[in-house]
Amino acid sequence: MTMAVDKTTTDREALHARLLEIGNQRYHDKHPFHVMLHGGRASTTQVRAWVINRYYYQSRIPMKDAAFLSRCEDPELRRAWRSRIEDHDGGLDEGGGIRRWLRLAEAVGLDPQYVASTRGVLSATRFAVDAYVAFVRERPLIEAVASSLTELFAPKIHSERITGLLEHYAFADDAALAYFRQRLNEAPRDVEFGLAYVLGHADTREKQDAAAAALTFKTDVLWAQLDALYFAYVVPGRIPPGAWDGREGVAREPTAKEAAE
Ligand SMILES: O=C(O)c1cc(C(=O)O)c2c(n1)C(=O)C(=O)c1cc(C(=O)O)[nH]c1-2
Image (tube, rainbow, N blue to C red; front, side, top):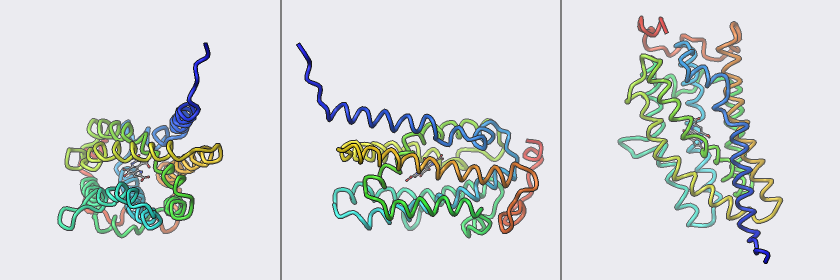
């Protein structure tokens, strides 16, 4: 007796496996800058450069989600998506993820106003992040959702980061790292919805390929930011003109413990 195989189920499973494999191969947890950062081998200046540049990514996430919402005709989809903006922007008084990121900036000895100004952000960081916002604004909705699915892999990197930073850096404590702990609560909900949406809507080979390509594009957006950071702040003498010089916006000198790290 031959068993009838539900083609839709196998297609969904195959696409799911394909998306996971893209993360396995290409997610930025494997980038040498992250390996250095999480292993305690980043200098105070390198940690600060990462906080300054990564702020730009954080600042654009709610803008890309607003661009996404502005294109959704389906109220169900808007209702499910809008919590992403609330996560990052938060309420009028308490703020959200962006404010938590600025607490991290303060903890590493930076003036949060300088970080929020985005002066000194590497041009390559801007180009990569702006390309993500444009992608979500312009591409079919299924690709826009698929591009958010790097978050499938984010809880693992956030856990590794919390452990690594607490172990190796004097600035790290629960208040400084609140951003990452909070994401551990938020990301699984977002990704559960996003994954179900993509698997449910990718009903042709073309759409499956487009979803995989969107996720691949997004891994490039993340990887390119770290390449730029590595070249500017790890390779000696390579800070590009106009980028943070290691001094502007510094609110305090490294403590003796930090200087010894
Ligand atoms: O620390 C990280 O490595 C990391 C990665 C990603 C990601 O995979 O895009 C996000 C985040 N963090 C994050 O904190 C976050 O809020 C977030 C939103 C999104 C998105 O594409 O909508 N990605 C990410």
